[in-house]
Image (tube, rainbow, N blue to C red; front, side, top):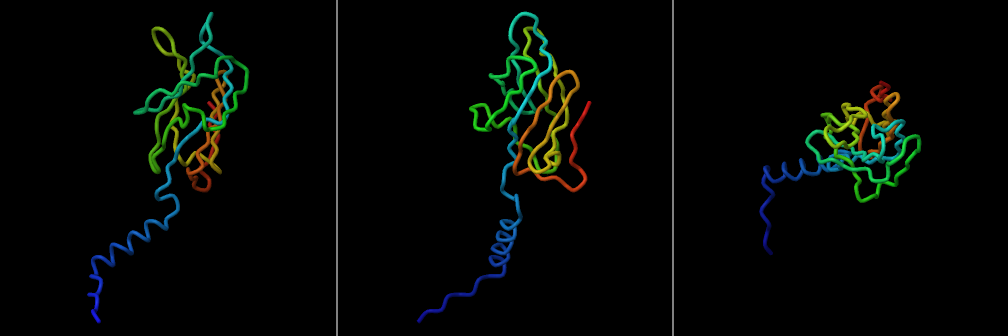
Length: 153
């Protein structure tokens, strides 16, 4: 009969830390943001249909190919080929915006700080008067009590 040597204290500590980290809710979950609905109130193009896109600093532009007309509510399922829009860090915010592509200089619908703490029950609504109303989803984003808000500008 052979006896196995006891587990070293260093290895035991490593196993305990790994189990503790895995038990923290959201420790490995990604905070992917998708577009649920959008209604643009105006376009900046005179003759052609607009090319609308979403972009956060450090990310690529995400074109919204279906959004072509003002005063029409577009609803999405989250599985479109261009979704998700971005991934948010847990503690920091990202500077994001909704834009309309233009030949010389892109038109800005609005730019704002998007934070994972903005999402109450996984949903955040951003409204810019005279420009657009959009609802974003992030099921793994959490909100601290009292910090959720709908931003009106």
